[in-house]
Length: 47
Image (cartoon, rainbow, N blue to C red; front, side):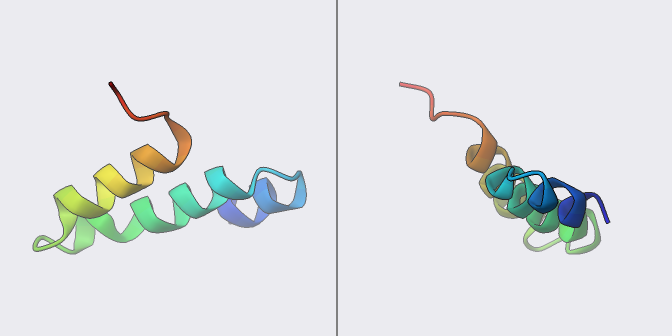
């Protein structure tokens, strides 16, 4: 439900980050890439 609450207050990127990151721990094959994608949605890329 946190993702829906974030969407309600206009924080859509954070909502998607939560929605993508939450199942990452349950998908061993994709854990690292999903966690990284979720992180990049809310943090600017490092240069």
